[in-house]
Image 1 (cartoon, rainbow, N blue to C red):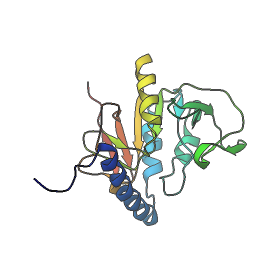
Image 2: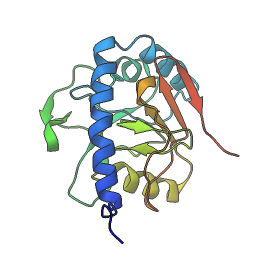
Image 3: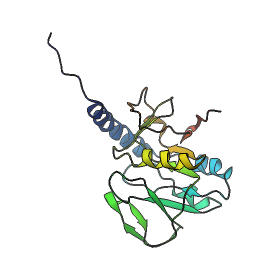
Image 4: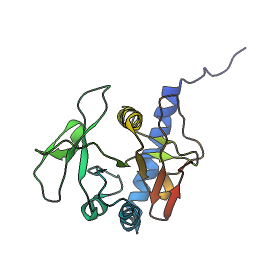
Length: 191
């Protein structure tokens, strides 16, 4: 029996990332719309809770206005090392920043914060609440570790065009609780 060899899950995910990068780039060029305002509205329901956002890179949708408006401590991720969960350093608008791993900006100094609410960047998401990340597994490890300590709210932040029919997953992939896009809020929280 002949035919094309079966692709491994890592090959399938790599191809999905390639397509997702192109889709996100096109969506980025079209503009963010009301996404940051919708995210700020969601975060308003979590006043006082420790929030982890991220410093947008390249064509990632920008959470900074919502992070700056949050009423509570805000942090951004710091990559400690390959195969490790992220840590989160306190961030405020205008604080001194330095380049971290992969060129992401991180605060030059500040307290380490354990977030209760996380704004999670992504390449793609699906209606099952799964996300396609960059392939390092940092957010999956981090969410698993934090959720073992207690409830956490993981909010995917993306352009609506980043939704796909099915994100390829394995047993280490963590689900999002909601996704905020420029067109609205998708709530996946299951009780």
